[in-house]
Image (cartoon, rainbow, N blue to C red):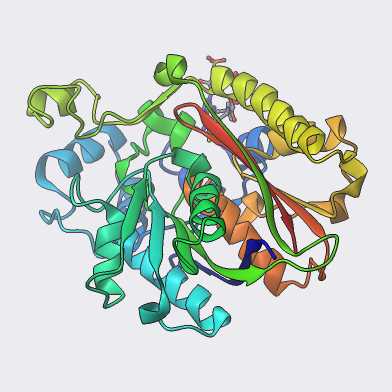
Length: 367
Ligand code: COA
């Protein structure tokens, strides 16, 4: 009997601090109406540091001067974060392990993806592993942006099918809010992205029956010719030295995005990869019981719903409450769908993601 991987536990973590569109509109020239109409987002979760900074920024008479001061001196003269991306990854992982009925020690491997890590090195997966109390479990670190969790699932699935590992934890975790400029200069990205983490435990099982449960197929792609459309130089080696006052003054430590170009690519690539996944499995879109799309923009998801005639009950969206949490968005949706009883045994579930790189992909699962 062939070995298949099944998701036996899911988890999520988001910071307690909620930022609604009204608070953002006190920091930059935007409005609740603009954000809801263009993106579908009403509120998002951010780290306590970002939240406290936003409250100060909202009250500051000169927003640009206040943001410059934060960059020059740190927030209140302090540059240590009170919550890091690995903290969120650990919380989501513990929940996923608890749901799977496992301890961290039972894991054979961890696959982690984050866009903005705790440190340039070591990678966040290693930091997370250490915080889970592990000292020799292998860790794979991905930096696949919003597609990170879907990429991670494919890797974990191959390890399990190939017999190398039996229990793999896959994590998508992000703490992006700390890098944005919440004044007019950064408003295009600052309203979209937010913080959070999601995780899933995959376990080996022997496939039985004509339609065995578990991960069925993965369809992955990247296009490195479009890196300028969505980039965060931050502390990368594209500049010498990686961080300098000049880099900060020139605004190159701030993420950059060509929103329209990303939108067009996302709609095209997501549509293509959904079709590819359906074709590879000989399925019409109607046969998919639940679609979980990366939560980048509700308009992108609505466009897919229109193309593939997906009714509301056959999707799970939460961008209204969490914004775009990049690699965390698909596993957070997955966890909510599990907890909300959205899938029953035997259902077909398709996970789809698109992000910086560009990298995108789809995974089909029989639940
Ligand atoms: N509030 C108010 N106005 C804003 C704004 C904000 N937060 N951000 C940008 N604008 C302005 C722009 O400056 C522009 O002004 P102009 O016409 O005077 O130049 C205007 O709004 C319209 O901008 P445009 O880029 O045409 O809007 P849009 O309809 O394309 O929506 C995005 C902008 C960013 C919401 C949209 O392009 C998008 O969602 N793109 C994909 C982003 C994404 O998914 N990224 C992550 C991928 S994983």
